[in-house]
Image 1 (cartoon, rainbow, N blue to C red):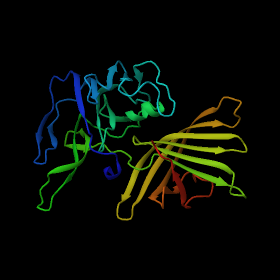
Image 2 (image 1 turned 90 degrees about the vertical axis):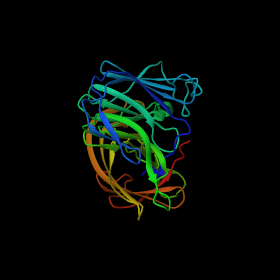
Image 3 (image 1 turned 45 degrees about the vertical axis):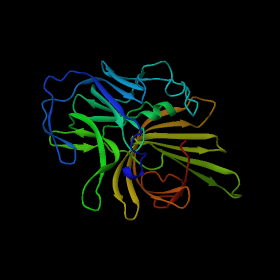
Image 4 (image 1 turned 90 degrees about the horizontal axis):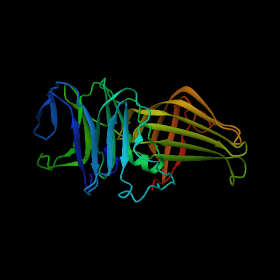
Length: 322
């Protein structure tokens, strides 16, 4: 999947502070440079972690205060407080939302081939949640993912996608990544690596004026947003939840994902405040690359995603993510 992610960081300097481990983990290094935990004495406790972009001051700081994880962004380095979509960052620090337990440790590093800082939060019970930090700046998205990993002790960053030359040697890596350390080894933190914003217009009759817009937003950190906007009825239904990888066929370029939508925001009457409901809508969809700037989604379980029934391919237009 990392083949489709953004890239090796041009600059990556990550520093850890406030370690309170009294018995750090013991590790050995493999021949390829990756670390594998032999024994883990206890989970890391890191109350502060900085991410740098080549300046003396950190660009992003994550810190634990009580039961919260707080983020501070250096707005000078990011060109001001206004995002590209007009989102204005409020006063900082800003709280990470949707944590499923008490945070014990924080870690920030890039995943991909470019600057793509990902926050990893280790909870007291060893569960891990993540947050793509660029989305905080771009869209005001401070919702952490659902729990993605269990029984984790700490994190490290390093190379991923080891590339061998024709002599069978492994001289370099394709990208940088984050590894979650377990009692028996380590696992790579995985991101969704395809197109984040998709849309499909439904037309009735003249094919000039659309009657409905379907939007599908799939974030790198495995959050899902599905919106149905009916223009004539002036109604908008917005579903929010998360999704996960079920299978990946790189030969046929076909990928299957499961999802669960847990919140419905219903704006039937735009003059009234929208109704917010807690729901549990589960389903499965298949995804493949389409012709041109399209991504083909076929819902097989759950919502039909375009009002034409299950098992019908939907050719979604890819919305540029500038």
